[in-house]
Length: 278
Image (tube, rainbow, N blue to C red; front, side, top):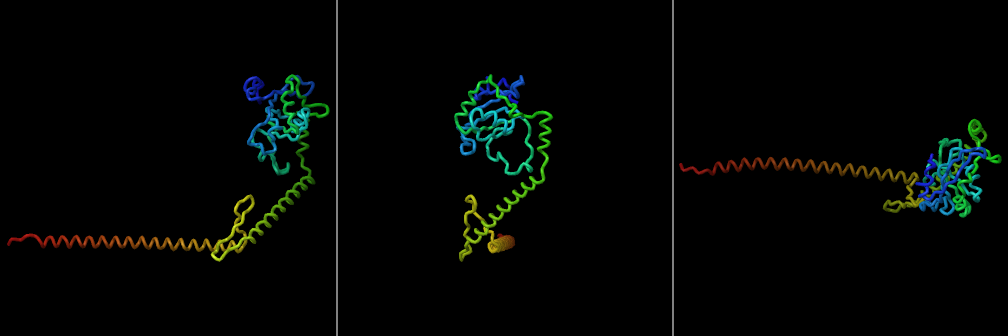
């Protein structure tokens, strides 16, 4: 939890504005959240536009995406709300899996990215008076806490078999469709491959500009034969290397033998040439 004393020091120097939250009209305690315009240039091509996105810190656990949307809709139409455990890139922020196959998120203070439909809503939210709190739970939009919240979460956690079956069928249908498209693409690439007289294979570009490998049975057999020839050639080269090394050893041994014989012959000649006066 972010300390409220940061209002006039660190967060103020980082251009954050302070808004007050009040759980209900009967509540006396207030909670501070900190907002500023989201300006990360590395994300200018994502779904967080630089001129229409509000970055929010210190959002309490009882504020869901729908609650945040309702609170900030008074400043202008809200396009999307994204809550995360910590700031970061928007890539992989949403899971493609159904809710039945995703793990439950941790309950705690989070950060939020609120995208408005108009850029003027950012200034309206930042200029909202701090002494006028935003009420979270109203009669029109009640927010459950405590035992009521736990009962509601338990009821929501019960899986209905018909809806689960629909989600599984939709997932498998999408999976089969993607598999069929991939098989057709590989078959088309295999048919487009052409081999010239010297054995060169023309490889086309795959998805995303990557080089596609041959997937046909004929191409696989030719690749296997090529690897076999390469292995045999390597074995032959290794044999020739061993034979050459062995020949060198024999030649060195022969030279050493001749060298010893020459030493003995020279010693004998020297002994015969000694001066003998008698």
